[in-house]
Length: 470
Image (cartoon, rainbow, N blue to C red; front, side):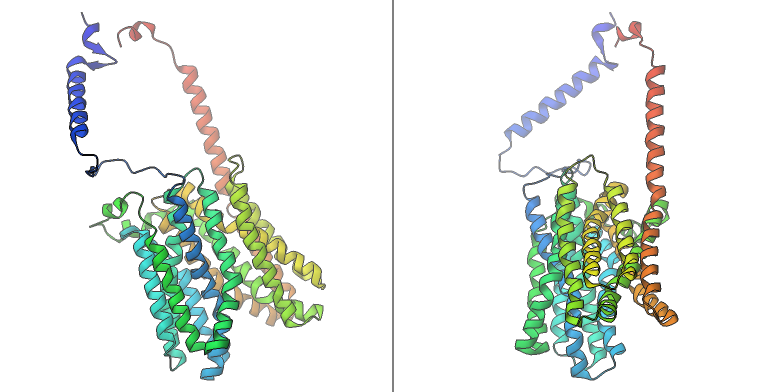
């Protein structure tokens, strides 16, 4: 008597009510016009990443924006010379223009993450593109270095950050299984931007002067708004809707600041950026002093670094297609190898070995960079990715600010290049070592899960009597 009315522990009347409700829902939806939009409830699940389709448009838009948002800031050196000649200021005061601009590119990362959370990737990029274009446009009318601090340094600097951060993290929303491949392809725009933007801007200065060049740069950077408009939200901006009425804690995801894995990775970013800036700042001067070659040839070492970095970004996109390769260990290895390459610089006084070290350093640096967003997504979740990536960029900025003064202080103290390069290599290798506990905790967690699963399976006893009643 009991069996007909109970099936899998659910009373018959309850199942019947659900069946009727389901049929009613189907009949209602079938009668709806095909072109009528279906409104999702607030509790509806988000759309899963399509891993392709329109996502490739997002990758192309991200690639182009990364060319602009990194290529333009790192071309500030050519404007630096023009500003020196125009305003006749000291090298130190003039250098602050580029320092403020680059510092805010990294330092405004947390702000960019908050804007993404509050609005969307598309809105953040378009605000940043407009700010950057206005900043470069106003700089063309500058009458003093202090004017440039505000227009080029602050306005354009924050704008560039608001373009770069969402252009990177938006890919995580559109890709899951091919996420690492997509990150690698898009980030190759950084390497290409470093290669092409400096000569392009230099050519515009030669033809139109630095003021005319800034007008052109302003119009060029405004195109990031066009690319940003292509970055439509996958889930219709529902993530931003959830934050409406929430406080700063939810917008900035400050809870992440207390997680030990995040803290170790943030320290990692500060340390390897100290080493990176020591290398980039000192390698041309070291080569010029010890190899006897002219400065143009020595500066070509940075071009070798740029080409190798571009190659590394493409290479990591291909490597990470293989799911058996651990992205964490690849990141850790790349960090350690770059540290070794920096530390080996003082061991030679010949140009060819230095060029080889630049190629090795650039290749593994290029492998390292695209993995940052991929690891942040895996470890902290897609929802917190904009904030985590923004905080990491802030750490990059701290390291970038500390690296050159440390290098200069060590050189002044020892009157030798050995101490700065050994220091840069050492802190970079230590940056790899300091995140080892993350991998160890993952191994212990997997082992614990495996033991628990085996124990649960062994203790499970089949109940044939009860199974006949359910």
